[in-house]
Amino acid sequence: MTKDPTAHDLSAHIAEIEAELAKIVSMLSTARRLMDENRIVDLSVLETRTRFLCARVLDLPTLEAREFTPRLEDLLNQLDAIAADMHAKFGGLPVMPNHSAASAAGAYADMLKHFP
Image (cartoon, rainbow, N blue to C red; front, side):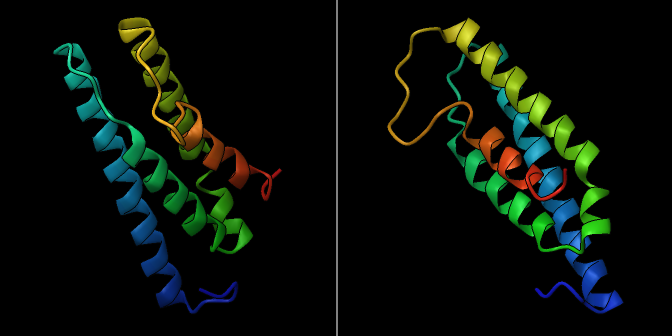
């Protein structure tokens, strides 16, 4: 997507971002429920989806991208909270190579560099 999209393209792009954000929030809710059932949850798919989401936000014109900042900050807080809760609940379980609790948060932090 270019930085100068038509109004229709921009609306479709924003709708795609909204849908992806809703999917991630739903995945976090499911992860929470599974943790409450004392089940181990693989959050690696959240890294991929969060990176995709952040990349799509970066494709937006700056003004529209900044509109997502509060919601992305909320998402980051939810990711941090679930990572902390998993660590508290499951403690010393090994972390798979190339996956860390901070990976999804890192994608968001990378995106924030573009919107100080």
